Image (cartoon, rainbow, N blue to C red; front, side, top):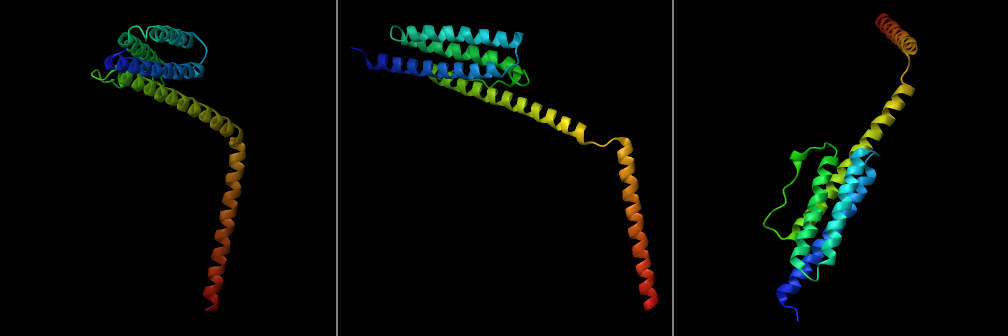
Length: 178
């Protein structure tokens, strides 16, 4: 018969493992967004390592639930640290600290949210890059050459001269009529 404490420990371990799985899923999505090459391979290796740690936590959840919760939190922490280097700025200094006094479940959940936030930031950066590239292409196609621009400027100048001439002529005619 399990005591209340053991049940609570198993429940927390289960929740921490669930959060670690969610963090793993977010990390996998982030890995897919990264360009192919060494950084992506390194990140995917970190994701695989964290997945191994999480699976070990799942296997030992019933036997030693507290250790399983710590392992799941460790897997989430590995993913969070790896995602720091893969973020849009690669800035390690902007990481939010997860509170140490909270339980493994809360830390794992916080890390999963952090991974999701970083993935969204990376997605936004890529969207912006595509938008800028399209804008540049459109500008290159639609911007007139110097010769075309000079021709248009001359037309505009002639139109303004006509307006001034017509306006001046009307004023003189009104003055004479008075």
